[in-house]
Image (cartoon, rainbow, N blue to C red):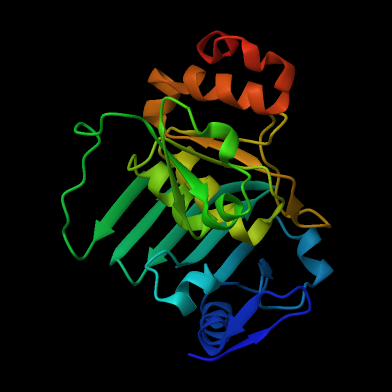
Length: 248
């Protein structure tokens, strides 16, 4: 499929635009706002309690490359909080749906076995582009597996489903990149915070986040201190000589 390129160099395809058109026709009611990567932002959303925050195709580079690491991401915001989300990866047949009220449900049309019990090490999902730029080299000797993957929304969905233990990024992200995934992680009993440790707020005038850290429910209960020790090392390099397990 052919792609055009936006001013900042990101690719956009007819699939992005068709998905955006369909979702806009289906989702927002007259009293609900809309924020999408493929729609010119309308400041009227700031006056709405409920706002749909959508990435019609997150992971366009992977989509164009034929990698099954892209998805459609739909988040619902109420009073600045991500309360519900749906993420679909058509390439893998996975659909992740959930809300703070109902929890999370995962549908897998390929019916592949999924388990955490056989994994020898905790799994952290890394940004494929950040990894290529060398931004994850500081974790070379970490006591957990680091796996590069496209689409931050898909990574958050996998953390929410308990199929990975954590993901984080120090690169700024737009709200449409993460709104659905944040809702799903929190719906599953996991945790998502800013790099400063605060809850994420959505539907802001500038819909951009400096970064985030997400833990699955299992990681919160069993091993978040392990990850947090290494995150502390990232923020405070002078602590690198200490045992990272202590830093948590």
